[in-house]
Image (cartoon, rainbow, N blue to C red; front, side, top):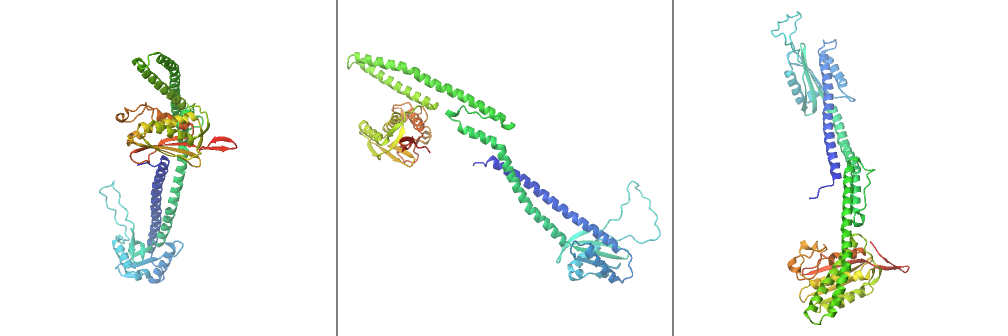
Length: 499
């Protein structure tokens, strides 16, 4: 399974970490704000409960508590009038006053009564100062009376914050609706819900941009690596404008290019020098063998041996020429004598040669007239001869060969198909390797050293084309497709179309 890009993973990881931090911060902030509002409300409730313990004034009891309730709705509210419920009992737990909210909601009345019952009783009134008891444990101070407890309860009319207190002259319970607080907290929550995804998007985009900026030297290095070919081994990456973190990587890469260039130059020079050095003695040896062959008695055993030696010398000369061409192709110095080549005429000549050399094979051709390219005629003949020679050598008994040629808008295609045994998948990718001949059990009786296809492809690529093994052919046949830029005439001058 292909992993996502490093840049994408950095952006997602940054967004994930930032998202976790923002969600945690939002949740903690929300609870802190909520607790602060509730604490502020509890402090105000405690203040109002203490106010309820003051001695009564001249107004009647009911009117006094009515005014008290009216003042609560403003002192405990926010910008609007907050619902407040008040329940007042005397020392005998008889109802002295209850607000309309308590009368309309029996559930709220029950909750207020329960909260009053849970409130501890006040100490008894005694105008004389009681004696201070001796503390058996003088190191432990006496604890002050516990303040009233405040709780939040849910009823049918909403959520209430309830506080209760008992005094020597009565019992009071106050309930404040949390509707306004809940609305404010819902607004804050909605702000977090909208702002956190926006912040995450900004973090992801920022991380994507920062990661792209950080990885730019890697992209530049990749671009240079892609451009390094046989002709580009002298390329180097400048270090002056590179970040410090990538200096060592680029320095090692430049050193690797230097070693590759030096090794490749030595290998190419060795191949070219070896081919040049072998050319002269092989030419002399071939000439001496031909002259000696003319001097011996015709039909003798010596003549037969000399003829065999002459064939081997010719074979060595052919190998030497191929190695020389390959070394020139590797160095990008293969010289082409470009002329207008009539591929239709050249292919028809090849068809006639195949019919003469292998009369046992059935030859089919589909070659339209007027197919032209600009190229080196001798080298293109060598490519076609190599492909047709392989089609003959690796053909089946009483097999067939088919030659197709056609052109598109910018290219000329030549396909050579022959009957053959199926090529194993492990061999298909190595057919163009030098000195590779596939399964020895099937190729040991076939002449060759495995340089023909490699040289043919290098020649075609030097012309701006390509040579491939067709992978879409049916079972029991092999097909090679030769592609060359199409020849056109522009203002009387030939040129090669390139894509």
